[in-house]
Length: 241
Image 1 (cartoon, rainbow, N blue to C red):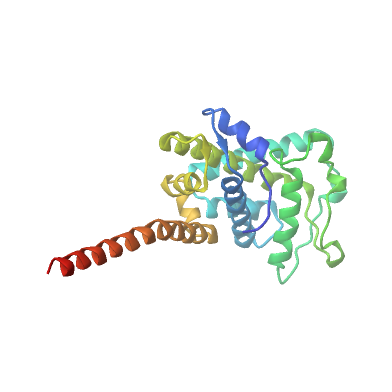
Image 2: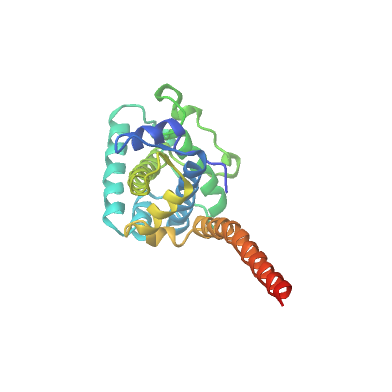
């Protein structure tokens, strides 16, 4: 899994605590951050453009549920706040369409900027100055306007908070105080709005592989014990004979 951080441990625990007095493990939080990372990639891959209208359409295509619609509403409000704050610089809002579209590089640039602007990350409000965001591929003409990054960051945050609430409920159902990767898997698998997206991810395969490995670890000793019991039974029968 990638070492990405859209949501910090502090923010995640605060969101979960609003539902119930639980916490989240670092492993579980890593899974959520990696889910958001794949979600971002799907959005960029679907849009194949730096045009805001195309990006909005991509959100509706990748997440065609009320969750996606609500995420767009939240992003619109966040963008409006940014524009009205007077912090936006129109000279940095110009984007140039590049053909062929450099998907991987655009994704990597969005990843850096979304993590930078995330209010759920480790940066404080004073540390999110748009002028200090690194441009990984500026020399290659790849420029992502701050407004686009802030827009997609709001979408990721909204979906991330939604997942954390699901995880808190899954933890309550399982009776555990610290949410584990098992609760994340249950939350993503059992929710009708998020599962269609989850089943497309590499994360799902990785988590299922880990679950199978864990299950095998518990099954193997039982098989050994059973085999030993059979051997002992045969030995006793031979002795009696």
